Length: 180
Image (cartoon, rainbow, N blue to C red; front, side):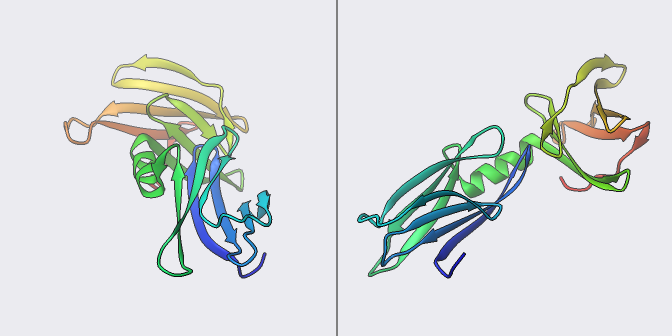
């Protein structure tokens, strides 16, 4: 990659964390998009220097759009939208609707994500087969990671403001929260 990188964003999705980089050659009209250092879109000799580039991110094909807008003179502003929302709004919403645990399992890094709205569970980019059941104090979502019995328990916090608390247990042991 060269010095034409004008925008860089780190997008957290259920199936992974994606580094998006955008090159914009204002003299050549070149536009190049990289996701995790891999080129996913290239346009050379674009006569119109402003506009949009839309592309999919991740295994679910999440829609991303880079907006290129002219400011004064020959300067430009680059903004990223995810699923039609500004990058910041998307990330704020994602943080509220998911719960993520980062841990070591059998010596390997493991990223487990719960989508609270769908109750889907992802581990290192793979959507897990789950079984859900009602328990005395709430619900339990069971799944297996590398021969380990995993369970996400959803229980009431007892406080209206906090709502439901999600806890991850692996082989019966509670995992301390890594990130909210």
